[in-house]
Image (cartoon, rainbow, N blue to C red; front, side, top):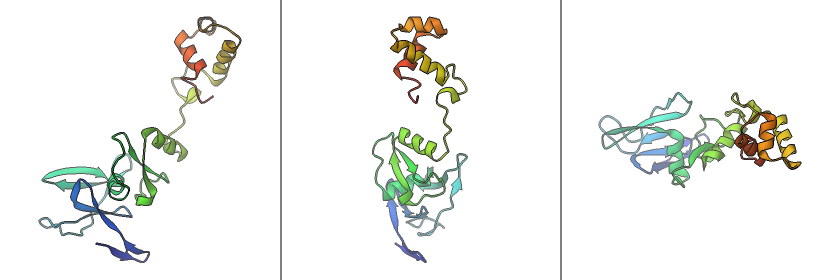
Length: 178
């Protein structure tokens, strides 16, 4: 069932896995089936969890589920989760904008890149990490010594770091951003 707004009709679709509920294209969730004193068409109240994401409580077969609104909208409008590892990513970085066009399935690394781009994930790579023992300049010096023919063991002894730390930094397993 669709309703109209000044912007036009609102599309509602059933939510896979929750047959008693529907999601709107804008991110609202409503009951599709009447139950006790809850009529069909009743839009559910959303709550913000401690991480800033909107959630709703859905009840199926007597079991209550607290579910992310963005996940329900993605299931209804985008389709099934491609793999168990995929997450719902917000295109604009706003956790409040659960319009289906703002959502997409993404891998955890893609979602982390989005969060970094939106300023929600601080860049703690390399010397910006509070536990970093190396610096950008030191990594460049390690790489320069290796290019000059020094053995990893020699470089490690010279700079006072474990051989594996030197190897990882020189080969790019760590510090790949520089």
